[in-house]
Image 1 (spheres, helix red, strand yellow):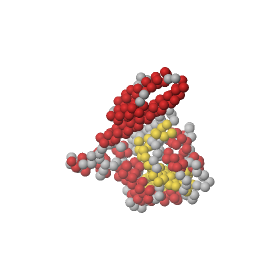
Image 2 (cartoon, rainbow, N blue to C red):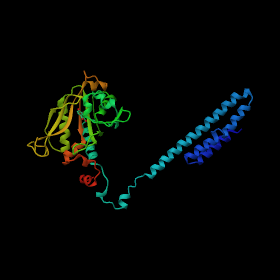
Image 3 (cartoon, protein in one colour):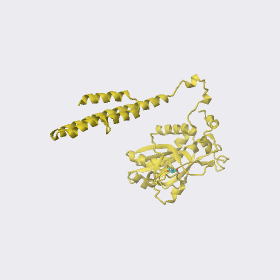
Image 4 (cartoon, helix red, strand yellow):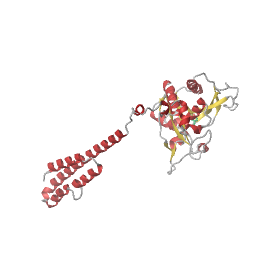
Length: 344
Ligand code: DAH
């Protein structure tokens, strides 16, 4: 038997093939039940007992070598296939010029993404990390770790899209990044987690099933509501490019204690009352609060030593406030006439 020859032959044939199916066919020609290797195995049967051990070993080695050759070639081929696919998908940057497509016809960044990036950059300048979290979540991160155990009435506050296993869900808020963020690092730290959230709700002018939030969290030794107010004022000032007045009203959320609703003085009427603020003079901007000790504990942080503050900014709402949009459904309608108004 000529082992070296068999290996070379296999190698050569593998190289020639450039389809996965053909590779597998080759594999069975060499390594299959009736393949070339089996003739060596047949020799084993007729071999003298004292030779069997050695012969068996070398056949196994040969088999291993052939398998390795096959696996290497397959891996390379898969890689080549992926590269080819990517080549096909290559973006032709000259397309626009060649086809004389005007700026107004160009696709651009969505207004919510635009505002999200702007806010991320404001927070990063204030030393906040930007974290991401999965859309498909488990009950623990969406509820339990946030002090919302099963049967807690607060679960009904957020109509949830559950998966069939009743354990996974589409996250109903970005507060899910709180526990992940706390476990990732040692305090003191501060981060924001922007992204899509999902609620199984009837839609109307101010409710959508998919919308965007930006969660913020800060953990340090001496934190108080004053820090919260400061960060929110800086944020709103940067967004609206002018000084804003804010106030806190008590609000209930199981993961903060105390919890608040933060309002901003209406920028349209400066607080005298108009149709935009429904004659109240104030506009609700975001819920926030001091992180509940139980939530800190779930994140591995000792509430005796550290304090936390958290807030949940509704990005779509902010876009609406900034551009005076009166129906949230417009934002995700995909209506280009609407989107182009933002210059994107
Ligand atoms: N996760 C809450 C929601 O979507 C919003 C929220 C409230 C976030 C208070 C917070 C907070 O961080 O402190 O309804």
